[in-house]
Length: 142
Image (cartoon, rainbow, N blue to C red):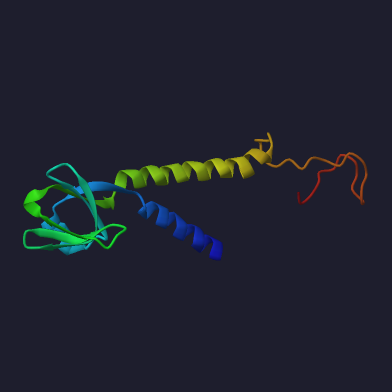
């Protein structure tokens, strides 16, 4: 049972990791969802990774990711702001791929090992008299 729970948790974690960097409206998105990191493209085309972003009036503030350097950018000097958002297309592709992989593994380890008999179980008959059964009598309980 713990292996199933761990596998399901891993699957959901990986599925949740299917994200893409998408443009957002910082004045609306940041206060509502509070992302940990956003990527800001300034008007001079430089990209700044801002951790713990905050929007106060017309200014985006935070710290440069990986440092403690404060970042303050007027929204008028910002071209785009992007954040990681769930990508349902990537998630669907991931889940379809996992289903195909699971099917292939199940086929390889169980179904393909069953042999070529497609007519069902055939127990056959005794070739010689064995344990009180006459030669040619059907084998029971196979």
